[in-house]
Length: 145
Image 1 (cartoon, rainbow, N blue to C red):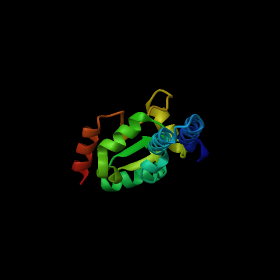
Image 2: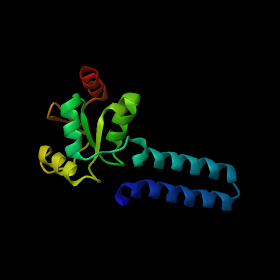
Image 3: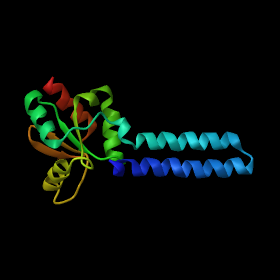
């Protein structure tokens, strides 16, 4: 759990340090802007952007029942964030598995990526696809509907 928040907390900490330095220089307006930018970046890299994660076993069970893709992801991954943002509201329909919270999910990703935790790894009909195009994932969602 804590590992997922390290990067966002570092962004907030760095933004705070820069903001304090700017306030001490006498530029509070720039300090506020810098702090807001760093907080925004922290939020985008936090688990808050993604729908609630479930376990790999539960995700596979649900996917078998409804045909929707399973996405293995981790906080701080720019490709995962790109996929989530490009899916938009449809992203809520996907079964998300945070590999930092679910050891079985991390093991599943390593099994299909030669021992690497390469994310996003999308499982469609039991077949893994590493870092697929978001448009392709949306198409898979349309097929499952």
